[in-house]
Length: 341
Ligand SMILES: Nc1ncnc2c1ncn2[C@@H]1O[C@H](COP(=O)(O)OP(=O)(O)OP(=O)(O)O)[C@@H](O)[C@H]1O
Ligand SMILES: [Mg+2]
Image (cartoon, rainbow, N blue to C red; front, side, top):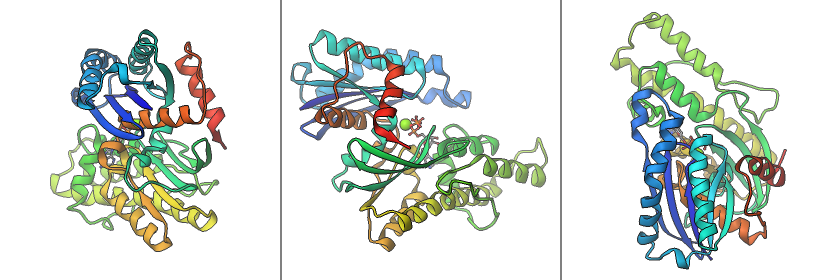
C-alpha cells in the first residue's frame, strides 16, 4: 500500500510518502514568520499552507521516486487544529484523491502523534504507555492496539508545550519557547528555584497553569513588574521551570508503571523533543525493564509521516470513510470510535 500523507493543522505544512510501511519521504515546511507575532496567526498560517502545498506534495512524490499514479491512499489531518489551516490540507487532499480516483482517509492529528513511534526502527509493543506532550495536548494513555486507546489522564488547563511557550513569553523569549528554554536550561541549576508540581484529584491528570503563575510571581517579586530579567539569571530560572515540568510528567508515568502492566513506554508530540524529558523517561524505562520509544526529532513536531502511517493503519483496520466526510464531525467520530475514557 502506497500512502500520501498531508498535514496542515498548525504552522507546519508537510507531505510524506509511505510505501508498504516504509517511509520514502517526509518534507516539512515550517512557518517561521509567526515568531514576530509571538504566536501563530491563523489567517497567515492558512495562506502560507495554500502557497506551499502543491509544490511540497510534488517534491515529496519526487523525493520518494514515485508519482501520483502509484499512490493508493491519500491521508490528511482532519483535526484537531486551526480550522482554516486544516481546511487547506484537507480540501486539497480530498480534491486530489477524488480527481485521481484514490482512497481518501481523514486522520486525527493526535492519533498521528500517538502512533508516531512506529516510524522508528525499534517500535513500541502493545500494550504501551503513551505520553502525548504537544503544543495543544497533554495525555497519558494506554494504547492496547491500533484501535483501542484508554485515556488515563489529561491536562485540566494548559498543555505541556503551551506551558513552555507561555513561560518563554513571560521571560522575554521568542516563540516557540520550548527549544529556547531547553537551550538556556542546559547552563542552569534545576534545583535553584523550587517551582510547584500540581497534585490533582485524578492522579493521572496534569496541570501547568499554577507553575506558569509561579514563574510569573517569581519574576514580579525578584525583578519588579516591568523590569527585564538579566540574561545571566535566565539559565537557573529556565532549568528550574523545566525541572518542575519533568517532575510533573515523570511522576504520572511512574505511577502508571506501578499500576498497569505495559510492555513499552512511548513519548510523542513536539515537547518529546526535549532532551531532559527524553533522558528522564529513558532512565525510568531502564529501571522498570520496559522498552522506550521516543521518535526522532523529525517525527516529534508536526509531520505528515505520522499522518500517512495512521492512514495506513486505519485502512488496514478496515475503517471506511465516506468521501464527503466532514472535517469536524470526523474528529468527534474518531474520538468516539477509538478513545475510551
Ligand atoms: N526541545 C523542546 N522542549 C520543550 N518543548 C518543545 C521543544 N521543541 C518543541 N517544543 C514545543 O512543542 C510544541 C509544538 O509541538 P507540536 O507541533 O506537536 O504541537 P501542535 O501540533 O501545535 O499541537 P497539537 O499536536 O496538540 O495539536 C511547542 O509548544 C514547542 O514549544
Ligand atoms: Mg502536533
